[in-house]
Structure formats: C-alpha cells, structure tokens
Amino acid sequence: MSSLFPALVDGPREKIALRFGERSLTYGELGAAAGAVAARVRGTGRVAVWATPELETAVAVTGTLLAGVAAVPLNPKSGEKELAHILSDSAPGMILAAPGAELPAVVGDMERVDVDSPRSGDLPAGTAFAGVSLSDSDEDPALIVYTSGTTGPPKGAVIPRRALATTLDALADAWQWTGDDVLVQALPLFHVHGLVLGILGPLRRGGSVRHLGRFSTEGVARELADGATMLFGVPTMYHRIAEALPDDPELAKALGRARLLVSGSAALPVHDHERIAAATGRRVIERYGMTETLMNTAMRADGEARAGTVGPPLPGVELRLVEEDGTEVAAYDGESVGEIQVRGPNLFTGYLNRPDATAAAFTADGWFRTGDVAVREADGYVRIVGRKATDLIKSGGYKIGAGEIENALLEHAGVREAAVTGEPDPDLGERIVAWIVPVDREVPPSTEELAEHVTRRLAPHKRPRVVRYLDALPRNDMGKIMKRALADG
Image 1 (cartoon, helix red, strand yellow):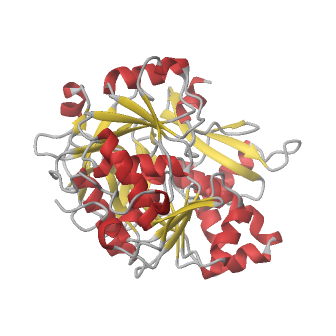
Image 2 (cartoon, rainbow, N blue to C red):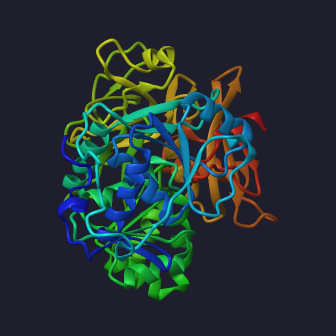
C-alpha cells in the first residue's frame, strides 16, 4: 500500500501543513518531526497517544502511522477507571505526550516519550523518514479507537490502514477536497471526527489544517476571513454560530466565503440549518459515520444540500435498512424506518480482544449492524432518525423516530433545546416524552401547546404525551445528547 501521506514524501516542503494557534509546521518540518517519532516507535506493537488538542498530538499520530505502528488515542478527560481499562486492554508499549503534559497516576511505570516539534532547520538534512518504512499491508492496524462504553466498558475498534485511505479518498471525491483547501476545526483529537477527518484528511490531500484549540465563533470568523475554505464542526458549534449570527455581520460574511461547512457526530437540527443558510447564503452539509465504520454517507459538494439528511452512501459503501427480523425494508420511500447496516472497505476489522462482540456486530454475510435507525429516499439520500436503543419509539403500533420530533419542537419559539425519548405506557406500549430547555424558564411552553405544535407539523401519533423541563441537556464531549442519562434520571 502506498503511503497514507504522499505529500510528506514529495509535496511542497515550505507549505504549512498544521497550525495550532500561533504554532505551525510546514510539510518539511512535519516530515522531520514525524520521521523522528516513527524512528522512535518502530517495532512497537501499539503506542498510546495522550491526545490533547495540540500540535504534538498530530505529530505523534502521523509519526506512529508512518512507522506502521497502531496508535491508541487517549481522551485526557477520561476517568482513571476508564483509562486503566483501555491501557490494560490495548497494552501499549509506550505513551507519547507533549512535553510538560501531566499524565495521571494510572499510567504508572509505562515508558513516556515526549514528542518534540522541531523546525526542519533544527535537524540535519535527510533525517526525515530515515530508516522508516512508508509501505504496509492494507489490513495492518492503524488506530485503535475506544467506543464510548454506554453499555459496558469501552471496546477498542481496530481500524486498518485500508479504512483510513478509502474513507478519506471517498470524502475527497464527494467534497471535491484538494490540496488547495484549508480546514478550520476545533474538535477533540481522540475521536474519529477530529483526528481522522480533521487532521489525517488534510494531510492525505496535501492541504492545511488550522486547529483553534478551543471553539469560538470569533476564531471561526478570523480563519475563514483569512483564506480558510472548509469548516468541520458538531451541532453544538453550529448552534452557537446560529445564535451569534444576528449580531455578528463579520461572522456571516466569513461563513459566506467558505467553500464547505460540514457538521457531523450528531444530527444538526433543521432550525439551525435554516438560520445559518438565511444569514450566510451557505448551507451546512452533513455526513454519517461512526468509530467502527469511519464514514458511510455524505452530501456531495456538487449535490443537493437537504437539511435533515446525511446524503447518499459514499463510493464503495453498501448500505441497507433492515427490519427487526433481518429482512430489508420493503421500500425506500422516505417513510419506512429500519436499522442501518453497512458493508465495505471503510469498516474496522473487529473489537480488540473481543471476538464475541465482533461476531455479534456482523451478520453472517458481512454486514455491520450500526444500531442506528433511518429512512431512505428513492434517490439514495438517508435521514437518520436516531439510535435503535434510545431513539426508536414504538407507540400505538407505529415506529417513530425521535429525531423528527426533536426538529419539530426546536421550531417552537419557546424551545431552546429538545430531546425526545420513550417510556413504558400500559395502553400505547411506549409514550413519547419531550425533554425541553425553555427559552424562558419562568414561562415555559405547556405540554398541550407543544403537542399541538408537533401535531400540526407531523402527525397526531407523534405528539409528546409528557413534557419535562431542564436547565440543560446532558451532552458528551462531541456534543451528543446522552439520552440514557435522561432515562436514568
């Protein structure tokens, strides 16, 4: 297999590859720094990376991949019990970290290697890639990324080099992504979105990435006004952008200059889609993926941007919707709900040390069971309606997706945030529960008002029967609403 990063070998050495705040590395400098890491870790089975949002994390992962070694990104905010499980399960030979980073006691006696980010001028000519193999098997592990562990200890998804290359190349096709693009992002680097799409994606194309470190609308406006062409974010970030736009004409102007605004990791509410489009003239496009599959679908840069959908399957990805008995849904009509199953070169090879979980995740003929439920249009566009375990509500004989009700609730002027779950009901099987963060906590919209609002937009059987009011919805690091926390609360 050819190098994951051809630009490090034969690209323009003086071009900026990475910028984190005031610190940056050209391709020549990144090649030297990553080459030094590769030489240090070569021959190690697996390497842990303390994945802070810093330049050193990008250098550490790039160098580890150059050496043909699997990187295990660690979330610095993880608790000690979770970290202990991940380290025990993955058994890395060393941990890479930025100089000065404080590591928790659970790391124990593991060998620590501080990652320097030297300028190319600090190294003798020719030291980049000295003794480093740039070619490895397609099936060699590239990353071991741990899932959130909502139903037990986190599982390590083994992502091969083949999956990285095919996913990033498919996105390049869909988004017309080239080395001329400059990406702005502020995503965590221990997750697929921020690390694979947001760092490795630009490096594979020979482009540039500017990481803000911490998200701010000011930072987004500054970078887009200064020549950046793409923005990657999660719905929480785009919601903050939508809220800021009415009072920030410079932000609207900067977003209007962007070639591509991409949202992922959770569904972006239609209300925020429309507010951003109205203020900037640009539509946010969405894509759909997960740790085990990398990316499955994406709206194309040259296609129709439909709010509330994640586009058609990417090149090389097979996608189907199945009923509970495993049969494919009868019709792709935009209404029939089924679980998404996917098959293709973008898939992981299995869960580390968990053959039981790996076997349970796949059908006999190789389809991966995502656990996500969706509808599909006749032309292939997919609309996610939620997770099978938490977002598929069976009420009065109907299968109802929570996502469309949430979008309807968010169109109410008195609703700031909304989540929808189901709870047992002796008559209906499950009743629809709306969890609302009201705009005015003193005078929130009533249950009757919200039920009528939803009925007018959707159908009577999709109206909430119960409304519960909160000061804030529980969210994880990627901005996803933690519905199990709502149900348990």
